[in-house]
Length: 624
Image (cartoon, rainbow, N blue to C red; front, side):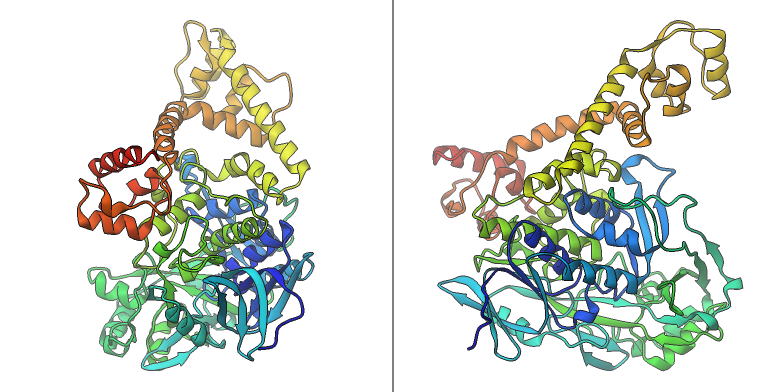
């Protein structure tokens, strides 16, 4: 085999959202990196919805940004619609979502990669890993040419033995129009990885000029866009609306009459689908009582006629797709520019990963994104960044960088994957994060910028700004708690106007701020701060005071959580010799090889009694 003349520190295979973040993180930490894409004209492609963020996903994007990643910056440069979701609910579930110009997103990310120091972008299909003495040492491409490196990150998306389904027709592809990666999948099987099959899909794209938008309800962007990134100063692209409509009983009947022609219901598809993102056939068959389902038409960019028809995803043959789409009110003359399709692909059981995303089976090999059983651009990018950071840490002989469940949604997701595994495409939800009140979108930079700075991914000016903001927040909380508001005619008139009870004796200002009818603007009216308080500071002050009781409770829960997390378990610990554990639990523990007692407690089936037994065994071995 002939080798490329240069040896790299890190090789990244796959130039999707995971691969891009992985390559950038490793390069920015001082490693030489090469990033391979099967088609580098599709770098950071958006093969499904051209959108970023949403419930819990927005939190991931903010965390990537706080650590020094790229997704939030590129999102702001390419966003054509900003929405803040759940504004009528508490701050723990506020989430940002954007609709994006998918071509602009790709161009901006490709430019970022091409101009990054110590990063080479190359087009090639990687077919094999080079493993020597049990460790990864490089990769081999489809031409038989080799590349050497100390660490390799696989971020292959849906390309591992990818198979597209449209009715009874199947196409070997990683995405529509792109080659599948079959040899690499076979090679991972040969190396002994436990692998499975998953399924996802995408709806049709319709021609804008063929749609009667008067039959849909317009859904506008927020009047004042709130950027994803803390580094964004302006939004460059015009804001565009989406349109909401619904399928009718006729649409449902068309699908029901042709259900045996669906690849999903004919038995042709073997991969596991995501319950939270059902195809239209699933909606029809699993919810037979429903007479209507929502359709959202979303523009794919500023300069394209393509409209993404969210809600119409299916694996039906073309003739049925046309009939089905045109049965929707407003789409009677709709022209499909791209058909809907389902795609199934191989993934690697994430129980075979360490918390650093390095594989247990092959040292130096890391995995990120859909290869780990996840779904979504945001989940992929977050894993990619962590894999890139930890690959760099390994090369630079530094300790792995691990975020735990109390620090970030990223920590929740990775812990879920490597501790519990997944048998369906994993998606991040706020409900998965037990400390979600502390892991909000609005405080991601306060939580993680210092970590990003320590890693060399965030510059000193940014860290200093965040530290100064933390000081101002603490000072203003202290001032509000120490300020007493005395009853007066003006004070009580204001409180009455705010539809809250007047006061009869002096009341601490923080007690008033806890009232549902009052917000930080009331603080400015009742006792204005002697120095200017910007919105980022006042927002944190209001949340910290209003939710003080809940926050205090979660902090106590985190203390208990940390107690178990601090009890490490050696990688070679003999679970078979632990008396008092069932054979089933011994097998589970030996399979996952948890790094701490806390991680062990989250393995499915592990009881508090089992944790007590394990704690005694660790102490007896002199390791607890």
